[in-house]
Length: 341
Image (cartoon, rainbow, N blue to C red; front, side, top):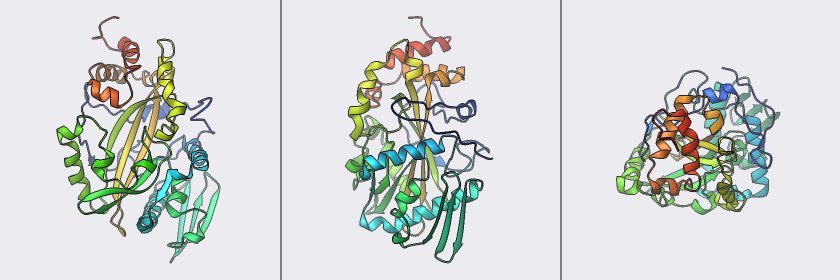
C-alpha cells in the first residue's frame, strides 16, 4: 500500500506535528485490557493487515520526512547519539543490509536497492538520495553504515551483542528516546539497562524476556508494544535534554490537557542479524494527543481506566504523577463508569 508523505512538521519549538485521520486509525493502541501491569508481551512479528503498523518489519508512515529531519537535527547537535563500538562494525553492515533489503521490497515507490556483487546502489526517492558504495567498505559511505541507514528510517535502533548468555547494548543510533540515554547505557547488559524499572524484576519479567530474546533465530523476528506519555509531540525526550522538556510536565491544566498530553507508544522489533549474530532492536515511536485519541471513544474509555488504576510506582517511573489526575479527569467524560468530579 503506497505511503503518502506529509510536508515537514516539527517535534519541537512550535510543535506543528499532527496525525491525519488515517494515522489515527492505524495508531498502535497498546492496551488489550482495562488495566496494565508489566509483562513480557512478546509475540512473533508476523505480517499484519496491509496498511497497518504491523504490515512490514519496518514501518514507514506519513511523518517520514519530518522524523528524519528531526534525527538529522539532533545528530548535528549531539553526534554521541550514534555509538558503534569497534567490535560492532560487522553488525552495522548486517543492519544496513537488513534495512535496505526490506525497505526496498516493502516500499518500492520510495526505495530501490541494486546489487552487483559488493557494488551496491541505494536510492531513496523520498529524501532524494542516490548512493553508490562498496558493501563492507565504510569509506564509500558518507557516514558509518549504521548511522547512514539510521538517518533514513523512522525509529531508533540499538544493536545488541550476544555473548556470555547475555545481551549488551554495544551500538545504536538513538535520537528519540523516552527518558534514557544511549551514551549512558552503552556497554550495559540487558538487566543493567533495565535496572531502573520498578516491580518488573520482582515479577521475573526480565528473566523471561532475556531467555526468549537469546533464542530468537534468523528470519523469525519478534515484537512488543511499550508505552509512556509525553508533553507536546516531542520525540527527543532524552536524559541529555531533560532541561528542555522536564518542566513541561508542570504546564498541564484542565484547559490544555487534551492538546498537550500525548500517548507515546513504542513498537519494539527484535530481529537476529545473520552474519554477526547480534540482535537488532528497533524502537519505532508513535505519538498521539489525547484530543486525537478521543476520536476513538473506546480508546479514551480504556485509557481512562488504565491510568486511573495504574500502580503509583509505575506512574512515577513513567513520569506521569504530576499530571495523571488531570488526564484521568478529562478522560472520564468518555467512560460511563467514571465517578463525576
